[in-house]
Amino acid sequence: METVLTRSQFVRWRTAIFAIFLVSGLSIATWASRVPAIKAALGIDNVQIGGVLLVGGLASILGLSVSSVIVARFGARRGMLTLMLVFAAGLAVIGLGTDIAGSVPLVVLGLVMWGFGNGALDVMMNVEGAAIETESGRTLLPLFHAFFSAGTVVGAGLGVLLISLGSNVFVHLSIVAAVIAVVACVSIANVPDRAQAGDPAAAEPAGWKARLGVTLSAWREPRTYALGVVMLGMAFAEGGANDWLALGVVEGHGAPQEMGALGLAVFSVSMTVVRVFGGPLVDRFGRVAVLRVLSVAAVAGLLLFILAPTTPLVFVGAALWGVGASLGFPLGMSAAGDDPARAAARVSAAATIGYVAFLAGPPLLGVISEQIGLLNTLYILVVLVAASGFASPAARPLPGATVGSGQH
Image (cartoon, rainbow, N blue to C red; front, side, top):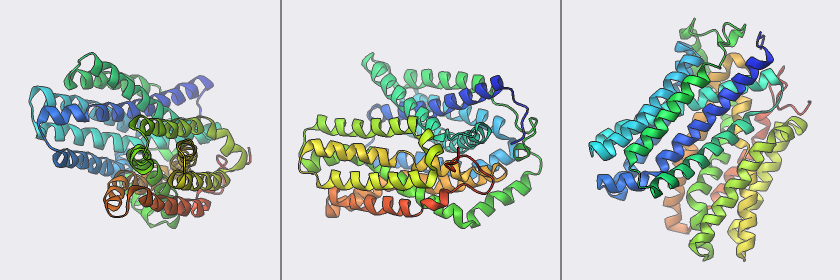
């Protein structure tokens, strides 16, 4: 990328994208922490709340799918600012529908705004992260995703605090919405206009109809689907752990409930640590080698988790599972963004495949587990993670790319 950014401008840009990843995670954990209260306030049953959650997931997938079109039409800076304000407003609308109006349709509207905004932003912030990688010559997307994970931790902790203080859903979600709106305005002010900085890939919205053609062409590239396999396997592994790991410890291995929560914590900490420190490993050994090693770790961890005869070994399995699943998604995003001129389209396509797995995978595992048992169902994850490892050569950097090549 030809650029006229000073060191100070680059640091502000990188910090701004860190902040955007953080508040995206914050918004997700904020919503998740209040689902039980929303369900109780609206007087709906598990089937109905499941339908509400499904609507949010579908809105997220729609946002992922059209994000590159939004970038092509309006540019990354305006697109990210607008989407952050949309999903912040969506949180406030969810709170309004829960405590003020007592309206399920209003909550669903807020969830659609929140899901669509977050889904579309996800692609844009990863494209910006990939551009920052190119500018710095270092693998940074795992660290960006670590900030997302940190945001979920902050959101969960804030949820515990405000719930313990007796805050209702409207007040809680409105506070977080205001924080996100402020971060949106401050962070976007520090994101450079890359079109004016000499980056031809960012010359939007001029020629956006031609960019729409690029968006559609990404779905005709075999590499897109191979990267999709890499991300699909690891997204299944991550989403499956979030929803079923704790239950696997309790029901599958007969441990008390607190051990289930501890097992999930072990998984989450292992994943976050590798995301924080994984970038230098990728720069040293390359994406493909790291993805292969991590897929082996994930397979080993899953098998140990399923077959372990003692609780301590179950925790070792959970740790290896978290280590193995940590970098598949960010490195898939990084590989999709190798060519800045086509980054938005390729990241959008690959991310859509991964997120469909992340959102649809855990419920599918739940249905299957009713027939064959939860621990036996996890063998499906073993197969998918192994497929992710076999597909890892797709993450090899494109000609001319330096990030993730292992040649630094």
